[in-house]
Image 1 (cartoon, one colour):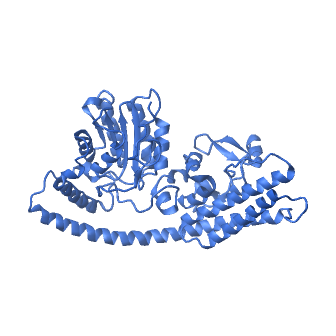
Image 2 (tube, rainbow, N blue to C red):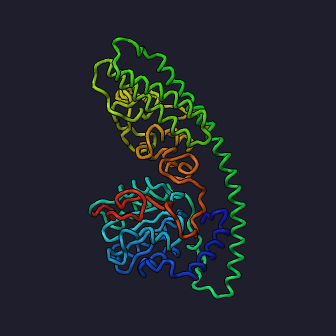
Image 3 (cartoon, one colour):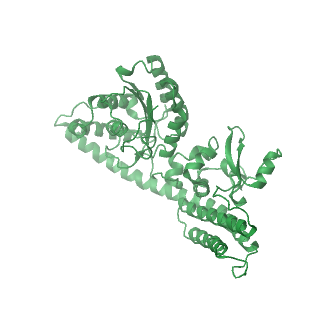
Length: 447
């Protein structure tokens, strides 16, 4: 099984944290015995089935699911639990995450309900929520649901399986003399982590600079194209035929142009580009509204830009499109691309530079994530790009941490091993009525 380059440090950290947890068992006294048992089991393997829920996932199916996760070498933890007071919906996922202490994705079948959560360094909350909605429904049995979730989650996850799954010892108690050893281990880990952090920051800065330069070429082309649209616009605010509404639309279009130029001039990180393309999308919508007012047409609704090239302007409809080797999906298209597709022709796709030559932007790397995200938004984009090269990166830290995905937390991923138990707001996704976990709501939607 592939190991993280820092696996030795991870093992040391795991030993240290296990010992410290043994010294302070009261820290999680509020969790039920059942939750603690489930967490203990998940430190030792990826799948736990509570005895009272054994009928939901037979042993053979549980073993097959466990083998699938182990073969993928990803930190996916799955628990099948009975819907009893011992496993409270409101706190269950966060308690499991805290007590297990493993950075990863946690999927729980609680009776007939299902939900999941993730550390943002492993998978974005929006991606987790989308997967939960996709696999959970009335009448779906536990095995089908969990396997469907694993099949879709594993390719999107970052990180490695925790070392504890390979037999890292779990300290059951720490004698007084062992505190000296713990102190030494902590010092070693702290020094190594400090050095690794410095190297990681330098690497990240270099990658960000390279990504920003790629984006600068594309965004400058977009700004230039929008400026040319403004130059071609036959509108004079002082014309007697112009009314106040038209003048406001025109001013909004000009303001968007100025804003885009200013934001791009001040961009220092890839995620700064998102504001630039958001401004350009706002400006093109203002132009579309202005044109409708001048021509006496109904004002257009606010729609996403044309999927194939945002420079085409706001879309006019959604059409089913299938990328090479991918699955069909509905994408927003402009009138010109609608005509091309209906005529059996290829749409006019936006090309960007790649190592293999010019390719459509959805076949490029994660550097183009914030550029596309500004046009289409974090919630819409994954569905449009599912199965494409860019789409597979949207739920990973390569996009979220380094390239600025919506609602994602940055930072390098530590490798799926033991971490501290105070996670703040960095664990989220899935259901519970939306948002991050720990806030109540229905578990899995009440199916």
